[in-house]
Image (cartoon, rainbow, N blue to C red; front, side):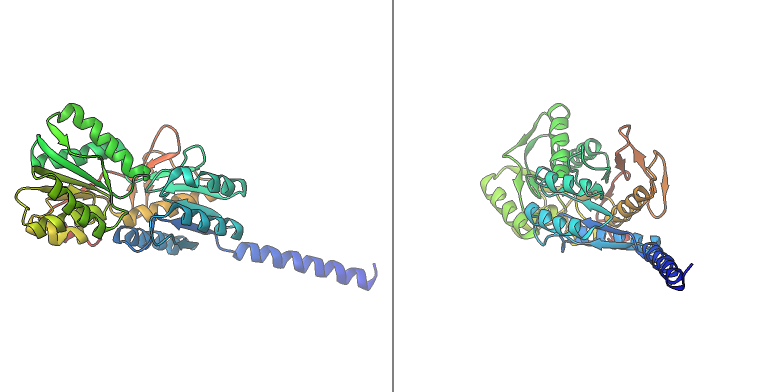
Length: 328
């Protein structure tokens, strides 16, 4: 064998070994996209997602639009697909609007999960839920009735009309109330607030003015009960209008303590972020979740019979008595 040929063979082997070493050194990259960034709920989710990345030794990119904008989510996801990330976990602002781009991600060999809010179930590899949607919706209405009574006028403030998770909870609560609490009277269709406390505050003021017999407001989406409570507090109506909903204990605490917000219910969003990253990383390794599986820093999960739907666990109710015990 000539010296030149030997040199070429050695060079090819070295190049192959270098490529293998690079491939082994390349970190897994998982994108976690919330509906929007900059609100406390999704800030807490970010903490959990990034902690999971540190614990697992993988690269977690947590980013999303600054407003609840499905078109902006699509644009950002297109960019991540072109960069060849390993997994995309998204909380869609509008599930239908994201279907084409998620199909494109799947076609590119990217693992796709939804979290917090369901996407098109036929596309995702896993759907990571905080709780059982029907049970949670019913629980929210039980809390409302406990505070305002089982009859009278009430209103619903929601984050956005296209959010599948919020719609699921509201639909479950309304269906439940028809038979369980038939004397409740919904004064108007659910009122969107663009996931903003200030908008919820203004909408609540509008409701108070339009419906003088209003006895309750239920806020579905973490900024909405806070905005409604702010309006009730300002008008001095904490003993007349009961505000309940889904919110973080730290944000709720000032309003819980003075009674303008009666009770809120949620889960630990940092655990949801952590769970999402762990499950995405497991899928990349070919490992599917199983019912009753214990997840470090999260607890036991429930996997539905479809094998795709994962439920983190039951919610926690936060009141003026216990809100100070939580750090999220």
